[in-house]
Length: 291
Image (cartoon, rainbow, N blue to C red; front, side, top):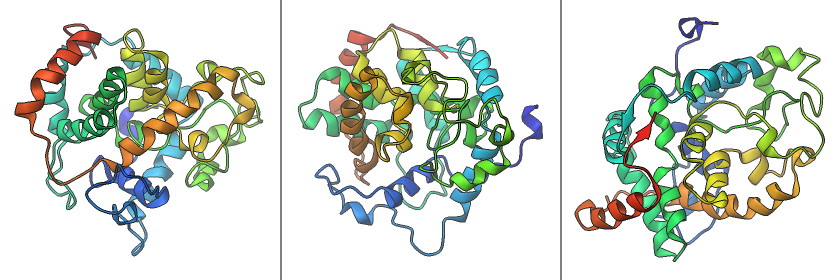
């Protein structure tokens, strides 16, 4: 299947699916300083038709074969080579002026996440994880449709859990009726561990693969599974987990509220923060990253 054969992208902006998360997963947490958590993008009326259409496309096209194709295409990391700061400049091209809820660029949103983590006294590697966790959205700038970049993630190659958002749309996915993929374990072994499971393609897997040699294991789980809500919020896919996954789950749960509820209309003061983050990035990451 070629890129041009896919249907049009429905979302108005890249973060619309995250707005929907705030509605679906309210979490009373002190991290939400700008307003109460139930006031964050709480779209009750009208229904979020664009988000539903986004997931219809996502669930239709995220097949096991599609994931293998994208892994080969993008995990070669042969598209660009940039410093972290040049990469943020690149990422900031994704700002959507039509977004009524925020006019902050991508770096400012990520700084809000990392600053909330730093404020609560977590290790500096976790602060860096907060800064880098959405860097994989640069995939959109390489021509990828939004449904192949953002959205809740899930395993491919086995039966889809009914805990996945809009699970009914999987009926249009060819893997849904494929006997190789539609059983409980599919191509996997019981208790094989998430590290041996292929996830739907998107910015989580991409940034994990990019940084897997530079961050501690808890940070890598945060990067790789922060959009895997069927697991860390709904408790699905227990049959594929190993003990290491269960140990790492607490870290993913710790990270998630900082991602969802740190958004604020007040931009971080980059002039003051710049020396700290330059030193932090230099401590853990190479001078340039391959994309």
